[in-house]
Length: 223
Image 1: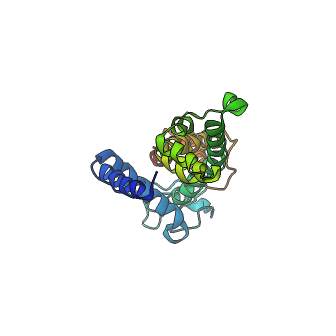
Image 2: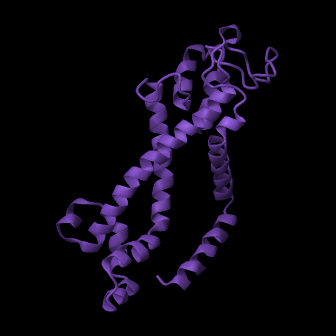
């Protein structure tokens, strides 16, 4: 794809985003969560692992017994729940993005090579997106003028796969975050006292009948 065509494609994507209410809402919420995770040390009102057993299981602000210094109450060890939710965003996003960056780099590279070169590599790797671009006219033209394989792969084919990659990444990040939460819930993920949304749900399940907000708040964050 030429530089001109790539430049004209970008505004079209943003125009579609602006016209899609769901994409705008989802993008705004995601940006907010990322910002909260990045600014966790500045936003958290308390140390997320500091315990105070004299203030255990304080209810959130909408309850009559709430206290102003713990807006979302405290858990069974007296730890500030708002602070743990904020730092939990760091863990969930960190795990999700970390796994996708590593697996994505490996998968995209293998897919490019398999889709472009074919042969025995093509038999064992999923590579549909790269293969569909291999026979496009602009790729064949680049071959005809002697463009290097590296340029064709990483400067032409890869940028044209960005829509597919974005869809896969957005779905897989969510799956990894849910998987981390599930493992933490089972005690196989993040270890206490590190705050994790899945771990918070696990720790709050014993109080689900009397203090359901202990599960509802991290559960809402995961949703």
